[in-house]
Image 1 (cartoon, rainbow, N blue to C red):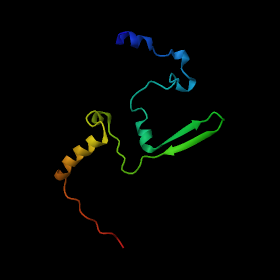
Image 2 (cartoon, one colour; image 1 turned 180 degrees about the horizontal axis):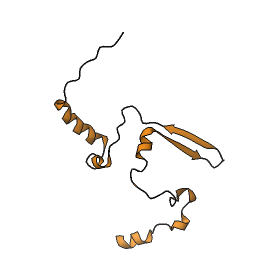
Image 3 (cartoon, rainbow, N blue to C red; image 1 turned 60 degrees about the horizontal axis):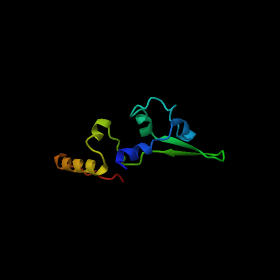
Image 4 (cartoon, rainbow, N blue to C red; image 1 turned 180 degrees about the vertical axis):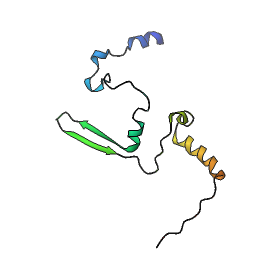
Length: 103
């Protein structure tokens, strides 16, 4: 059996067969970055359980978290790439002044 024939036999499920919780038809226009500013401010996730209860979790960006703009993300796909690029810039930066702790 050829690979092409094998792929044809594994056709995706029809949309009508998709479980209700996976139906994304009413999710809007799918614009990348649409909720970017809201996400940066923190976001709340509601999980509706089968038993009728709802769990609400609020997430804030952790200290040190950095959000990359989409055009920058094209060049830096992961943390290692970002860190390597920034380490190259550190020698070019002015030295940090040590601040005295106030008593």
